[in-house]
Image (spheres, rainbow, N blue to C red):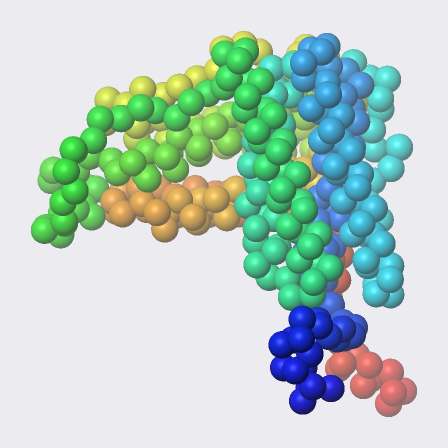
Length: 351
C-alpha cells in the first residue's frame, strides 16, 4: 500500500488510511478539563440567560449557551467512545433558575467577553497539544465559534459605549535598538518608560481582576457555608489588591487607567448557585490567572514588573491551594484522569 501511495497521489487519488490511534495523555487531559469547564460555564450561562433584561444581549448569551452544551456533549461522546470514565459534572441541584439575579446586565457583558478571551487561549493550547484529527477538529471549531462570540460581544459593547479600551500611548516615531543594561532596571536609578507590551499586560491584569473580583464579591454575598463566604471575601480582597498594583504601575507613568461605570453585583442574598459550583469556578479562574501572570512576566522586561508578577503568582497559587483543600474537605473535588499505579497492582497480585 505504501509503495502504491505516490502513484495514487499522482493520479489524483487520495488513499484512505485507517489508523484508530488511542488518545494521548495530552488529549485525555484536555478533554477531561474541557468537559468539566464547559459544563461549569453552561450552569452560569443558563442562570444568566434566565435573569437578563437586555434584549440585545439575550441572543448572544443564548448562542454562547448552545455552544457550551454542544461542547459538553461532544467531549462526553469522545470520552465514552474511548472507554474513559465520565466527570460527574454539575446538575440541576447546582443551579437555581428561580433565584433572583446576582449580577447586572453590565456584568454579563464583561463576564461574557472575558470568558470568551480565556476560551481562545485555552482552545489554542488544547489544539496545539492534540494529535488525532477528530480532537484537532473539535478544538479548531471551538476556537472559531469563540472568535465569533468575541466579535459579537465587542461590537455590541462598542455600540453601547461600555467596552473598556486599552490605554492610548504616545511612542517614538522611529525604531531604535537597546544600548544600555538599564533598559531592564526598575528598582534603583532612572527607570525607562513602559513598553507597549507591558502596558497591555498591566491593562488586562486590571480588567480580568475587576471581572473576577466582582464574581467573588457576588459569591461572598450568597454562599451558604461560612467557610466558603470567608474564602470568597479573601479572594475579592486579593483581586482588589492586584488591581491596585497594576493601576499604580500605569499611574506612575502618567497613563490613565480605564474603568467601567455602573454596578456589577445586585443586592440579592439568595444564591443561584451551589457552593460546590462557585468554588469550582473560582479554582479554575485562579489557575488560568496564574498562566496569564506567567505570560505577563515573560513579556515584561523591567525587573520591578517581573518581581511584582512573581509575588502575585505566589499569592494566587496559595489562594488556589487553600481553595482546593476546601473542595477536598467537603467532598467536592473530582479526581482527574491519572495513570495506573503499577506498584499497587503488583501488591494486589502478590496478595
